[in-house]
Length: 126
Picture 1 (cartoon, one colour):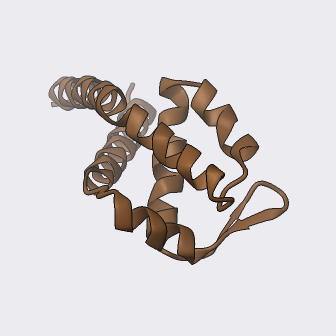
Picture 2 (spheres, rainbow, N blue to C red; picture 1 turned 180 degrees about the vertical axis):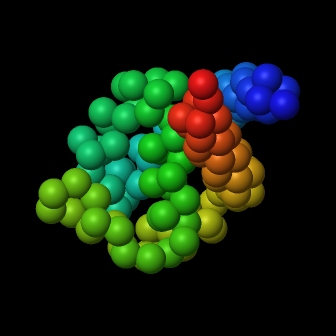
């Protein structure tokens, strides 16, 4: 039984990785343009964001979750000094539709569930 569960966990993690790369390739440029647009309108300090952009694939999730917070139209503390205003979210939503961010968030929750299940399976094994 444990072997079957572990097989499903690893299969799920592999599929999640493939989907993660798919999202990165499909939406990375769109996010890049959006953050640079926010920077040009002085809603965002580009230095707070640029580090995660330069990370490439590993920084993609941070960029997506930052955009998720921005389009929620709530004030966000970004970096040490600047706060992103709710107007930034309204501005971005008037230009872009980020319906895929919800799917990416669900994928991340699924990966977290799989990782917790993997920890439990390994921790209770003999």
